[in-house]
Image (cartoon, rainbow, N blue to C red; front, side, top):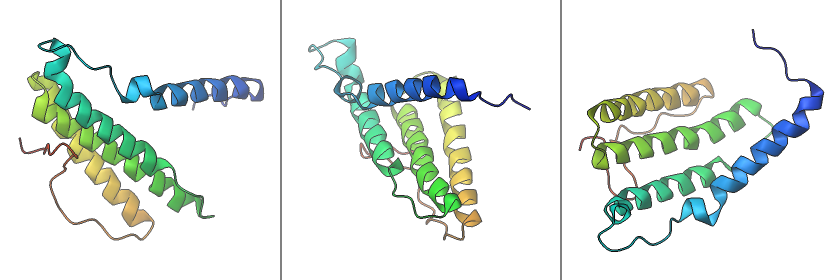
Length: 143
C-alpha cells in the first residue's frame, strides 16, 4: 500500500502539477515552430498536426463542470483522456515506423476502448457505436 502524501508535500505537488499543466497548454507545446522545407520536422508535420488536434480535443474534453456526482465527473473527465490516447495511437499506426511501437499503439487502442466502455457502463451510460478510432487528421487504426 503506498504511503499517503503528507500535508506539507501537497503545495509542492500542486505547484508541479500546475507547471506541467501550463507547459502542456503553452503555445510552444501546442504549435511547433514552422519547419524548414525539406527538414526532418517537415516530414513529421502531418503527425504533429494530428497530435496537436488530439491533445487540444482531449484537454478541452477533460474540462467538465462538476455535477455533484463524483463517479460521473470522473468518467466525464477520463473518457476524453482515454480517447486522446486512442487518437494518438492511431496516429502512430498511420505515421510511425517501428513495428513494436505500432503493435503497442494497437494494444492501446483496444485497451482504452475497453476501459471507456467499462466506465460508461459503470455509471449507466450507453455504449458508443462501434466505429474504428479516428483522428481529425483522418488516421484510423486499420491503416
